[in-house]
Length: 131
Image (cartoon, rainbow, N blue to C red):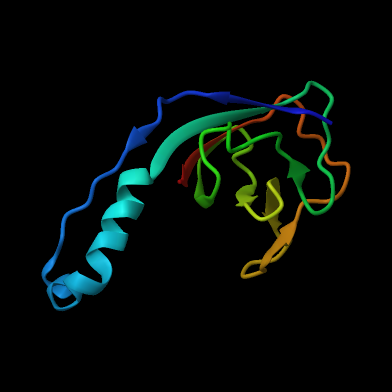
């Protein structure tokens, strides 16, 4: 199974401002905070499943979500999915897309999608943050 990952947005730097709560710790944390925020990168990726792909238990592997632009993932946020009936989650530790569905009764908790469920031609968009 192969999932294509394409970049939709150019990498950009994020800056931050200092708020009052940091004034007591400026000498301790501000230099570290400034170094972190100056290196933080944000970009958007689009993952597309193949025409005959099926879901695999424990998630579908994504090839190179870091795109060679970052070494450490901070967060991966789901933006959109063509599979509106499912909750989409990204397991950043294992670099996998996980899909969940609600059980059959009201108030039931989320359960992982059954193995071999078709996800043919599904698309997912994620906002990736890292440094």
